Image (tube, rainbow, N blue to C red; front, side):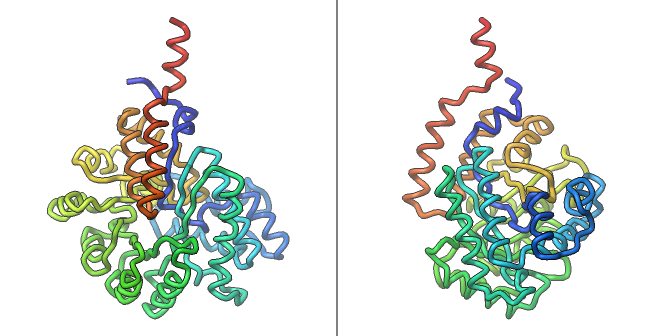
Length: 355
C-alpha cells in the first residue's frame, strides 16, 4: 500500500458535510474582530488565545469541548463578522480542495446585539456566495436547532429554514449536548421541515447511546446522522441504518477529543466501513479540533489503515450524501469520479520517474 502524504490528501477533491461555523474561525480573525468590537478575550495573541478555543487530547468531555464556543460566539454578533467568518471558512476549505461544504450554525446564538434572524442567515449566505465567486467550491447552509433550548425556538428556526429554502439553506439540524435533552422534544420542528420537503440531519449517538440515533431516525425523520459513533452498541439499528443507506457524518478527531472514543484505534469508522455503511469524513470544528478534512483522512490512513482506494470510496460517499439536487449532485460526482480515477500519489509518481 503506498503511503499517502498530507499533500496527497490535500490534492484529492473532498466534501465537508459536518462543520460548524462558530467552531471554525481563524485565530487571527477572532482577535481582529474582538479589537474592532471592543470584546474582551481570555488571550490577546494567537498563542495565548489558542488554549481557550482549541482542544487537545486532554479535553475531558463534550461539555468541556463546547466551552470554546463561548469565545467564538462573543465576536460573531454582527453582519460583518458573520459574512467574514463564513467567507473565510469556505476559503480555507477551498484551499485544501474541498469542492462542497455544508456550513451549519444556529442563528439564535447570534442575537446578543439584537440582529434579526433573517439578517443573520443572509450574512452567512452572502459570505459563502462571495467565496463561490472566487473559488471552485459549492456551498450550502444547515440551520441548527439547539437541544438545550426550548422546542418553540426550534420551531421558529424550522420556519426560518423554510423561508430560505432554495436560497442557499439546504437542511435543518439539531445540535448541542445530547444527554438529558432528547431529540423527540423537538419533533414538531422536524415535522415542519419535512412537510416542506427539506433535508434534515441530527447530532446523535455522540455523547449518548443508540437510543439517540433511534429517536433521530424514527421520531424526527433524519436523512443523515451527525456522528453516530454509539451506533456500534446496537447491531439491529446498525443494520437498519445500513439497509436504508442513511449516511453517517463522522468526525474522528473530534470524537477523540470529546472522549466518545478513548483512542483512535477504538473508533468504529473502520468497522462501519467494512460492514458497508455509508460513512463520510468531516471536520466538525476546524479551529476547536485543530483539523482539516485532509488531516482527518490522514488519521484514517495512518491509524486505521485505510487505503487510497478506500479513502476515494469514502470521498464518493460524501458527494453522494450531499444535500444537493439530483442534477447538480450527478454532474459534480461525475467530475469527481473522473478526477479520482486519474489521481496518482506523488510517492508513486516520484518512484516512476526514478525508475
